[in-house]
Image 1: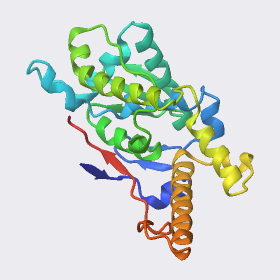
Image 2: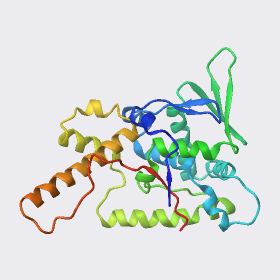
Image 3: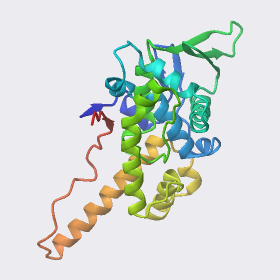
Image 4: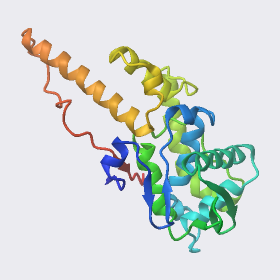
Length: 263
């Protein structure tokens, strides 16, 4: 099942700041160049996935105690294993990128965003608005389209937290194995590959592409792929090929959404 985007397309297309009324803050869409400053797309995807994960999918694996997605998230980043510390650091880096005008902090019950103003105004992301925040993160970082590319996973030491993510772990292991079979390297930069292809295919300056947001580079890359397939198919049909199948018009709408996979 695919859920429609919550962020208006025009905001994503223009790399505008994204309003988040539930916390009364504005979310900045970082450029690929800025993402490189925190370690690149691997760090981004690890942190963004942790912030946007639909943890409710895993609740059938534990007892009936009522626990919110935000509480599960805090348990995951609070674990002391090396991998969980990596996740926590990636989360902090992502928050640093998208809230450049706020001082970010954590309490057991909330993520604190403090404005650098005379009143030191404080905003909070907590159990009440965490799901809505996660949907915005999924949209601006195209996580439905880039799922399975971070090459990492949660590794909680607590029994409950471990049970909550076990199903996700199995799915990611399968994806990693498929990538290895296809000769794909988890350490290759996804966005770097997109820039290289578009720089050659569209004759664009990489420095221009480096200022794109994740959504902009992903949308343009997908549209470029469609156009290449469309042009090739039309040429094949004009040459008399009877095996050329109809393809989607490259000028049509590209649907971006969130896959809700409960398997």
